[in-house]
Image (cartoon, rainbow over all chains, first blue to last red; front, side, top):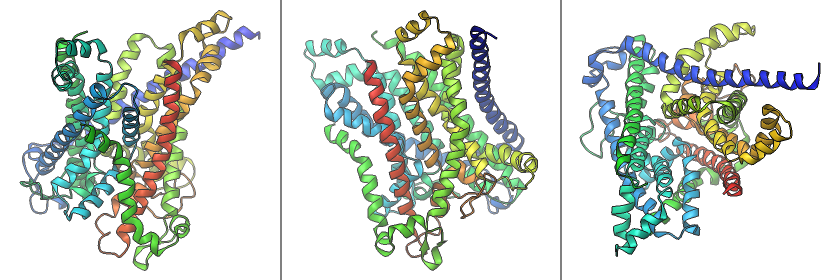
Length: 286
Length: 282
């Protein structure tokens, strides 16, 4: 066999392997979604999303996971708001105020990259030490703080990425009209980056609602809907985890239904963020 | 704004400091060597050796990497070098979707699909028996969870390889595959390694999914079909008891600190490499 043929065969073999592994990875995604949908639909009923757990729920009596759905929304919502309050000024600072290529900006971006890789259980443990420090028990507030820290780097990196794409001329045009830096930041930069900001917020919200390890110490768990920041709150991922951990088949089935609810929420968020990003790009200067 | 920026830059240090402050109690009571390298974990007797858990983490992470790396490299080379624009545009949101699935859902999938698969097919086929809750189950689930990171980062790195290099190689008569193998991948190697390191550190710290499928037996695993009890699972599983046993909370926060430091080490190295790769191109 001559050389050219061997090269062609090698290429063909690797090409098959490459296509195969791409298909395998996509197939895994499909299998995961299919498993959750099939198993979840079988156990799904209206009570799951309209009722809180009644007495004996974890032994198989009736009820639902409304406490966890509402708790998760409160928690992820609160954490997202907190993360925006911290993150948006930081990103504006990095892109409008800070010197381009300055040390502080580089350091902050680097530390967000590193924070992005910190496991969520560590955020949970750190949130727990903060709570011990402030004398706070497991509560909605504690969970909000831990999740806000967890999603802060995710949100900031995503916002920063779109703001960096912003043409510098746009800022210069604003300055030349006599606008201050603050006006430029709030009215020009934010508006220009709005689709990116919305996507970043939604990604962060999705991450916050799906995370369990960071809330296990901090938010606790409760069978009722939280009415105060200082009460423990249930979360959907933990509800799934606890229900799956029981020996009763009926309760385990409910874990599948809860997993379906969580997956649908996550999918909806990702679809909405794509649509929003498309819709708001109309207002952008290119 | 400056204050907030500085604050967010310092979160890492606050975390390490806070966890260290809380784990001082146990560090004062026991030598660090015993804490890290003894596998005797008996909180009630005051013995807190983390070795079995550290090994558990290394085993599951190792299995995950062995599975994930070849698949991810082939996929990212395919997506960045061979695939048509259409395939590329379609696969991106799908991989993003994989990244967005919560870890608990991966855990449910592991319990429903991977664990029975190992118990009913893989273990008998290998001539042994296993409950299915094992290093292998944890590794498979983790591998799927790190797919998106490794693919995403390494595809990005491959894209930074200048087209001139490819053209130069092709014009010398190399085939497409030779170009990819000898030029593109070689040029992108540091970045690809960094992508893998990021994947390793994600796998090392992942908690819920592993907690659900790895079996959680505090013994150093001897084979991939043995159960394992990785470090993050230990932390998450014992939050209830830890306040009632003396030093328990301190031991758990020490293990979070160990976890944080390991992950930080990996991440910082990977990010520095990636920043270099990026700079070479700009």
